[in-house]
Structures are given as structure tokens and as C-alpha cells.
Image (cartoon, rainbow, N blue to C red; front, side, top):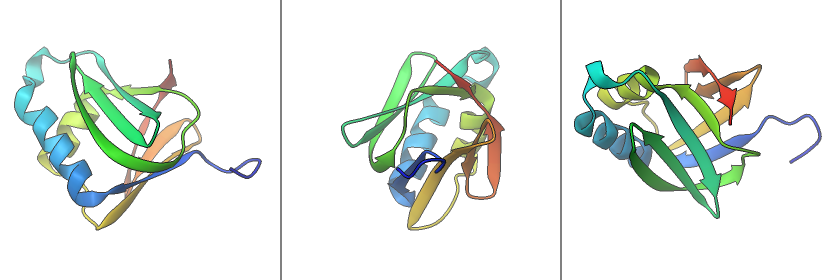
Amino acid sequence: MAPGAAPTLTVSGAELAAALRSLARRIRRRTVKEPAEFRYSEGELRIELAGIHETLPASGRWPAPIEVAGSFVLRLGRLPPTGDVLTLRIADGRLHLGSVSVGISAL
């Protein structure tokens, strides 16, 4: 990653949508007040919320695990972003995915 370049991961749109839908189906919306964790290691993106996780292939550079609002992940599960290939990018203290973004905190 070039100095100053934003941490970025590339994932399959279909696989990300399936992972987000699976999380949204398995988690009760009203019981989730905790953050969701995004962690990248050895070519896989792991998204965990309320002790439940989904893993999907990803490529790119991601420096450390991050947390976002759990409600953001559930909203994406109900209406996932579209596209064959999607980019997750961290910039200005936010996780950007398509036209949406959410504030992050580092673990």
C-alpha cells in the first residue's frame, strides 16, 4: 500500500450480500446494541456481530480489525450493496462501501 493510501479490500458483491443477509437473518435486531467487527487475515474478511460471524474471500490491505455500529451491518443485510466487485475502504475515520459509510473505531 502506498504511503497515505486508504486501507482497501475488494470482495465479491454476491458473496458479501450473502454474508450480510445471513447475519441479518440470524440476529434479532432489537437485541443488537453491540458493534460489529470487520477483521481481515490471510485472504479472508470476517464480519462478526453478536457472537455470530460470516467469512468471505477478500483481497487488499487492511491494517487492523475495526468496529462499526451493529445496526449498520443489519441494515446492509436487508438491503445489501450491489455490484460484481465491491470495495470496502477506510478513510477519514469511516468505513465506505459503495455510496454508504459509517464511523469506525479500531480494536
